[in-house]
Image (tube, rainbow, N blue to C red; front, side):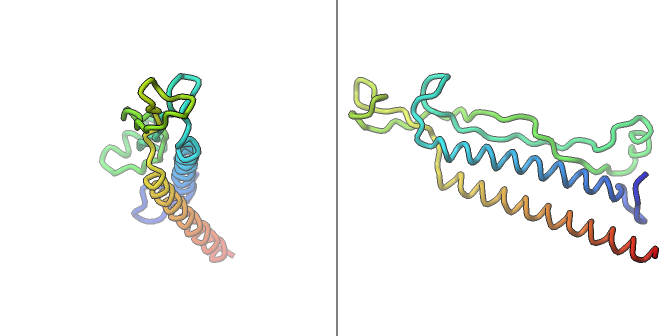
Length: 154
């Protein structure tokens, strides 16, 4: 059973569940971005060729999927949680950099480098970090409201 306020379509615990899913998704996003930055100069992978930039795909999912809830919520907007649908590889071709002394250089002296912009990845990291902080602030607000509700009941 969850604590609900007037006009609220979700309860206290559902708010924490949604926040938890968002924090998990942003953590995965930060890990993928970190991997991209760490491999910005990797020219040789197990699959062959340079490292390919990865990105995270998010989607919204129902928090409570029971028949009763589906019928009740048919006329009421439903809260959604965040789910990581997958991690995809960027389809852009590698950057060709002239470096004839590199062990992975082709016959013309060009090396296939990952098509990763470290600056773009850093901006993505800052954005993910701010999202993480924003959700954390929401969790703190939920905790404050719960503590206030508990103290009122004393």
